Structures are given as structure tokens and as C-alpha cells.
Length: 104
Image 1 (cartoon, rainbow, N blue to C red):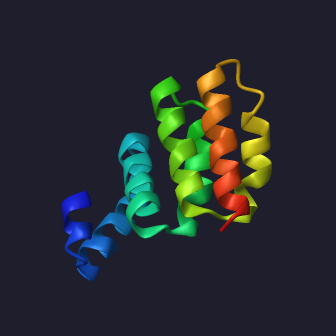
Image 2 (cartoon, rainbow, N blue to C red):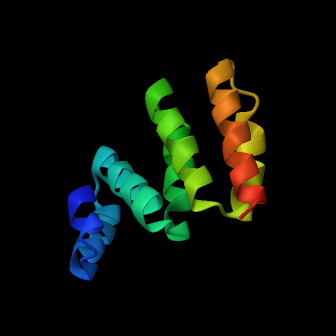
Image 3 (tube, helix red, strand yellow):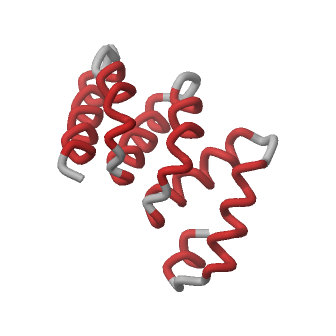
């Protein structure tokens, strides 16, 4: 899906947006990550924040980075809460994403 977006195909973007309606949460989250990282689509923030709760460590890092890439000030409260994570790397990525949101 990322390759399709690099080509700028609007139809590909719509196909990926349709994947946000999937019942499979992994597919839904991957679609949200692609839309965040390649389209800076703020409509996926809620999907990412909801997925974060049950995500494993590596997925949490990807979600935090994607939220920072979108750069929405609406995510700051979520990112502040992520500063309470027990792992230093998650706190660092959260802080970095928060800075990106503040500077957007």
C-alpha cells in the first residue's frame, strides 16, 4: 500500500481508507499507519490511539511516531499520558512526537 501512495494515486489512497473499516484490527492499524505516515491524515488519530492500549512494544513505537508525523495538537494529551510508560524508549518517542505536534 505504501508503494501505491508514493505514486500519488488517489484511488490507492481511497482503497487504504476503506481498510479502516476492516474488522481485523491488525489490518485497520496498518492502514492507519500508512495514512498517517504518507498522508498525514488526522482522521486516523483515534484509530491509532485506541490501538495503542493493547499494542506490543514495537507497535507502540510505530503508533507514537505516526501520531507525531501527523502533528496534530489534539494528540498532545494522549502523548502526555504516554510519558507514563515504563519503558524509556516509549517515553522518548512520545516526547519527540509531542514536540512535533507543538511545532506543527
